[in-house]
Image (cartoon, rainbow, N blue to C red):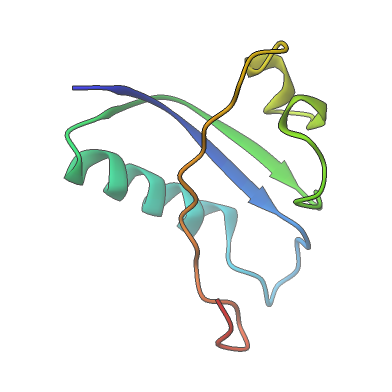
Length: 82
């Protein structure tokens, strides 16, 4: 049905954090369950959520001044907090 840009971001890339790979798996799972196709996947690690999408290293080139809509898949953290 639709085409999806997968956006993976970790604010702290540590051994205790959710892996970037698991975030990608969640995005692919969501896309398949909604009959969408993931056309590309971005990856920004050690990147605060307060950084605007257009200012992120990997996502920025995909958002040249246009509006961005994101459905955020949350993974439980190592402490059990979402």
